[in-house]
Length: 164
Image 1: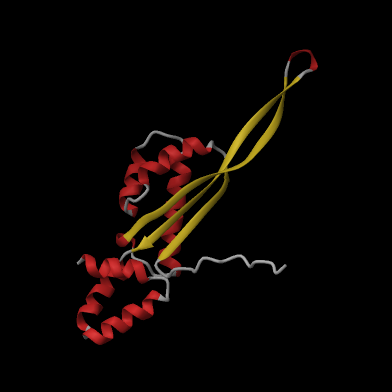
Image 2: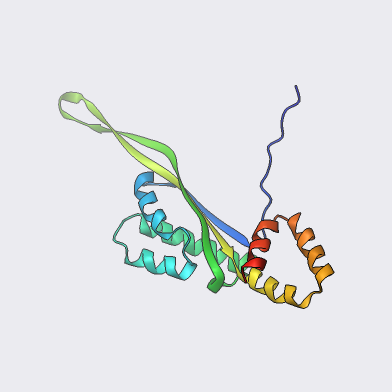
């Protein structure tokens, strides 16, 4: 039997991400905050997290800030156009400690951890593409759209092109 190769997701030029692993908090408590900021712009998410009273806000704030810094430094993204496209919280390992109790017994303390992934997308690419596609003739336009379809941008650009 031939082993199947693991399919890798193609890296997008307009996306940047940050991953926080083994963050010491319950995944349910982190999801409560993540659900509030999913789909927001970068600046709006920072403002929301600044005003929320939960303990999970600070690590998520740091991750969003880190993802934006990664995009600005490595891929030259513009912070004004960054949007949170994907924000997910997965369950991590559970740290176990023993607490001494009366009569020589011990009690197990379980500390849950979680893994948080934040993906930001830069929509300035679509604004530049919209300006470019208006300058291109009909035949060239179809060729550009066809070439971009194989680059992993086809559906997004098609939507962005027909949206405006």
